Amino acid sequence: MSPLSGFLAVIVFFTAILVAYLTKQFQNENSNYLSSNQMKNTNTNTKVKTIEKEKVVAETLNGRFAMLGLIAALGAYLTTGQIIPGFV
Image 1: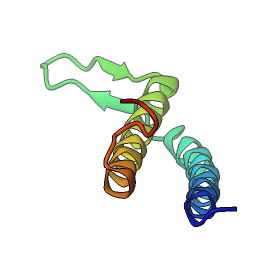
Image 2: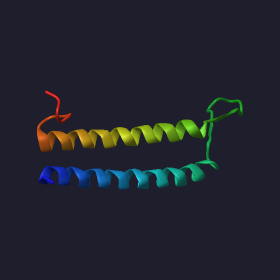
Image 3: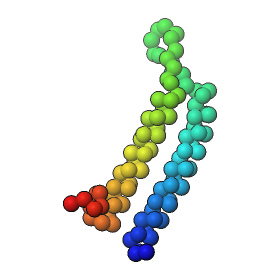
Image 4: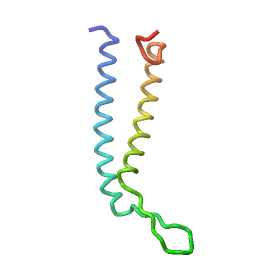
């Protein structure tokens, strides 16, 4: 195994651990969110708008994976000089 292959295997391993950790955190946030999912309008009437918890969790997950992708792209660029290694 070449040193680069070993390095990439370690990076994949740590990424898998990070994804597992974030998944566990989302489960905890989801259980905490169930009790506080209402926003009050500032209008004079007393309507209450509820946010669907699936949308909030999906947007949070999307944002965190986007940040993870940017870090992966930066790491690939720093190690290989290409954003997607193997493409010309």
